[in-house]
Image 1 (cartoon, helix red, strand yellow):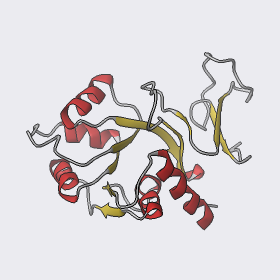
Image 2 (cartoon, rainbow, N blue to C red):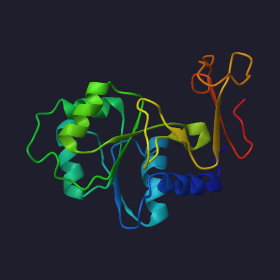
Image 3 (cartoon, rainbow, N blue to C red):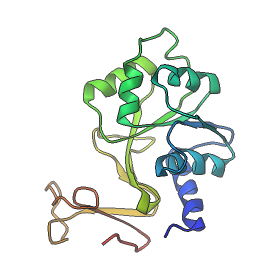
Image 4 (cartoon, rainbow, N blue to C red):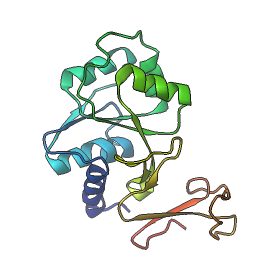
Length: 195
């Protein structure tokens, strides 16, 4: 059960992860009922007193112009969106925007990442989350060292550990067992565990 308090804290946590400021705008084309739109766009932006731009539908040919027209500061993209945006003809105006943060989940290739940064002048901020945890459990840091393609570090009040098939933590540098909860990672918050 996801409570109202869970949603409020998700907005607080997500806004702090990316240092979202009052007055900044976030734009999304994700369905509003989806956790990505709620946790990466709607809740954090409302938490800080920003503006949320909810697109009626995703269109690869219109998306970047919409980002520019609405002056969006924060975006969240999926692999399909990234690839279809990149498939559009490059424009001289591509780097003319206000985007400060582009959150991203599910890895793309190194060449795709490099080309996105070169073309748009924006770094992809990798992360991992799930609906059951009401948002991002792990996110690349907004500042400091990022280790692409790592999804990052546990977010506020989250802990993560890599475990074997028996649920025992594995030594540093070893691969964990595939599991329902993030390929061997158990993620918990304030004592809660999905096990």
